[in-house]
Image 1: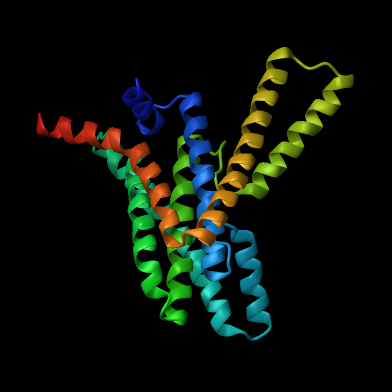
Image 2: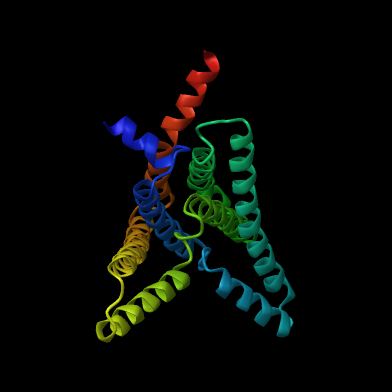
Length: 247
């Protein structure tokens, strides 16, 4: 049943399969939002390593406004991760089924805000760039914290550098084990992790293509289908909690 599947996907009871499926969905959304954000403001918003490096460069060169903007972007990502953790822990204390769905619902609402206000903010370039970058960084931090907590840091949806590193490690193990036969269980686990990380990178890449093409031809309305996907992913556990409270 689709309802049962959606309940497992973002509900409080987790399985490795539901973690993988949710991670793949969020990786696609992150790639699309990241690429769309670049076309909107000329800056990627999921790449905190590059953001911190750029901030340091601007500070060293005396470009203090740009350095401040970079610092605010990093703080936005940090704040998003913090809010995600607060929502999850609060919902867990309240014994809600939607502890992981609530941050997804918040991200969906923020995407709608971005899609609705983007054209209006575009008429004020200075405020537009700062607010857009801050909002997108907040959403990236929010989303990455969700899947990190769900999967015990095994899955990332915005940190492609870490995923590529994990792919390289897994490939190195496979090459090494060809001459040193490993235990069957270790080999199977390594192949599963390799498939997962390759799939996450491909979904992020595919989302990037979809987001870039959508923003190029449609504009800000491209984010509305992404918001709808997040709404669908999060809605069933939220409705379960509402029905339970009414009883």
